[in-house]
Image (tube, rainbow, N blue to C red; front, side, top):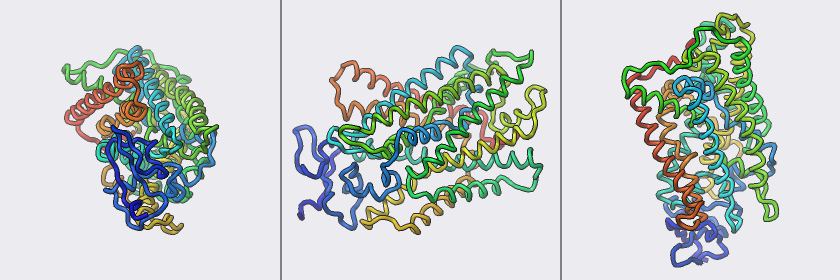
Length: 491
């Protein structure tokens, strides 16, 4: 039993060889990852690799918010997927069409949708290994596929940014929309942006006291309804009010070819980063029950099919109707887009409509915050339970969540321009959705080299990495050329 307390992790470990019932079995090309699930040493070090024990065999999963409850179903997964998959970034899709034009805009939008739907299918089928081990966290799957050092190196920043960073952005966006609501609808001028950030953060942390991801299914239901609602309401108003006669669909002239290139790549980046949620895909699937006869990927794929059909029905009309109504005069910020709702091309719309849209968006931000923050809460509790070998108490969970809320609030106050960095950081995290799943499929499933599956996944993975580099370069160029302006909620 003394030998079982030592944990060995090699870079090329295979998931089916991580079972504690065969701790020393390995082949000539792969080394086993030995995880002592039969005992729980009180002070396990991350360098030993013990922190990366995962799956149904790991009793620690029953203590953590992501996997504490596996009683979800297709409906709850669908709500989670819609809520996490539609964001306010979708309002900028007409701006991308203004640069790319009708044909290339629709082509890029269709390509991005198909590509990320394929990588979603890959992740869903990588969630469970043939031996029954479940990988309910993106980081754990990456470590299994790429090894401990490389897996952590290339995925920790994207995963944490797309969870914790997204929460900070939601505070900025939700607080900014609240400020717009109070000033334009309620005519209250005394509230500042920081005040609105604080109000939003307090509401978000109160809702965040639910114990696990499965328990917030009804919150995701509200988030899904509001996401579909504000997208539909905005594009319907765009079509219903008609368009003026002086609208042009020709791209605006640029001073130089480099400006033109930067504008095109920035527009492509807007389209590609509009589709989000890959960093919580495995986590959502982790809330579903699974057995050898009824694996979780069947329920999950049904949820993905339903949710992505609804997402497509929201984003495509929003992009095309917005571009049809505004042409190349589409506003370039969230605040200008929302404030223009009250005066569509000279047709006065009641402040009730603007207020309704603002309330719907704030409610959606509050709901989406719960999904992405759950990844952060899970990581905090994972560190605690790994050291103490016992679950977190209820009061300690509250402390963790209030602590994260305070840190996120101060980050939002200190970095109010963070959404303007979305093209830059979005380009850096793009491989998480478009490249890494392809490479993980090759590393774990090991298809025959140069076979059809191998070529498709290798090609898409490499193309995703190249696209990421190009988008980062273009984002840096645009930032140096235009600078940062945090007044993106100003009408």
